[in-house]
Image (tube, rainbow, N blue to C red):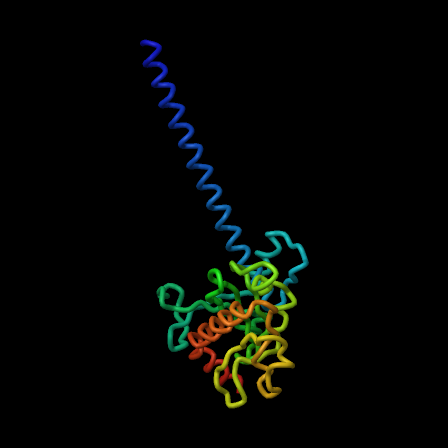
Length: 231
């Protein structure tokens, strides 16, 4: 066998080996990335109902154990009816339940909203009355740091706790982001449906307010059933 042929065979073998190694590395990194995304979602679901604090570092095992012990997931259709897991379709809506001692404490709804520069993803948690907000988190966005990017900060998110998604007549109005301080801009009778805005981020507030309302409209049939049950 000539040296030329040996060189070609060696190059072919090297190419196959390198290709295989790159494929394995890519697959491993993808799985790692997907696992991190899933873990981040679990953390934010737990955070939305106050089961973990943002400034407290927890191991992956601790987060997963807390999630498994405290959170349940179900799906509902457009009429608010529970759909068995094996029968769910792409049209059905996911709902997470915070459960303690066998009793539902909160309903956690995924939020997917338009933002100024991209999608805003988070979770809105409602107490068992289906009316009162227990928490709100954002885990993914492309808003400007220091401006709209403040939506992922604790000072902004904590303002949602205790707010109401219905008005005095029982109509769904969601929770909107005011243009400034609620106490300065909104009549007292409506302040329960607003949170303080972010300076210099009017459009982010507008888009997120719209996204929250559209999300709640999708879940309104379920929320009405919850509210009726709690009356």
